[in-house]
Image 1 (cartoon, rainbow over the protein chains, first blue to last red):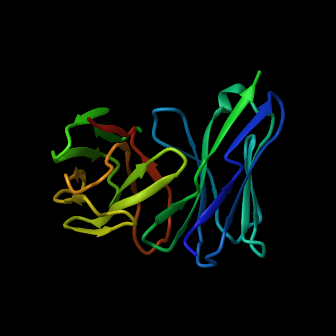
Image 2: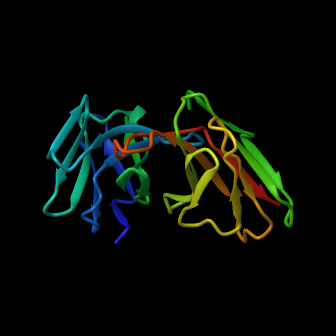
Length: 112
Length: 115
């Protein structure tokens, strides 16, 4: 119940296309859903996050869509660029401990 | 990155040796975390601390130990009891308390290799 399932494992997108990464969870107590971006050899950096009281959040080219009834959330990267090539992790946490449960990651390659 | 420093960047250890990874922060965050990252497995929580002199086990604490004597520092010791210690270790910080979950900020990581 503590798992966050992420797909696909890897993704190749042409420059200018839309990248979509999906995550699903079981535990309805999760109340915070961040997405992290990680470049090789670096620590993850927060990209965008959402709480379950909203269905969508947009920041620049990055959008989180959240479906509470389906217990799914996804990251959309519009107008994907080669510089977006990285590993993306979804995560979920509960309450004040802020213990994050991570998905297994998606390696995105944006081809020029 | 930013206000979180992890050292060293690369660490090599012989089997049977204990080794300590450093994590220092100047963000004035109460909470600190240690994660382990292996290919294809995401990040897994080793230990976390929400306040000085207190810490809790995460999902994979066996073979690891921590201390939290100062707010700024949360060192992780990988002991000889850890059967497969080769991994990328990440320290993170965040706000803790009644306001609920908030952003975690990650350091640049330490890559540990056991020879």
